[in-house]
Figure 1 (cartoon, one colour):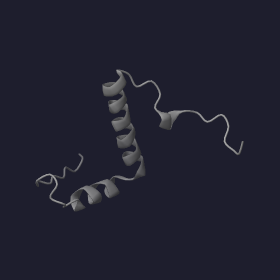
Figure 2 (tube, helix red, strand yellow):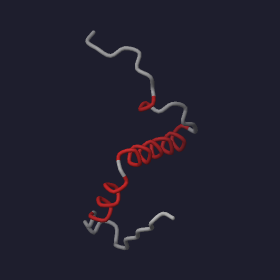
Figure 3 (cartoon, helix red, strand yellow):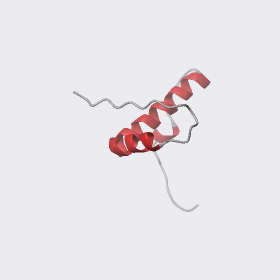
Figure 4 (tube, one colour):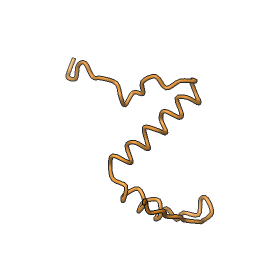
Length: 65
């Protein structure tokens, strides 16, 4: 069973230590997945679809032109 952590405080009170500790404990893959999910949600809300976010596009050429 997953551990559940909670923090209660007013928004904007400047105490981000809980958030920082939480995300650091999650690891890089969880942080990237959460960021990608937020991008997809934005695309759906803004454009009505989330075809292929820029972070997931295939690079065909990388170098100096």
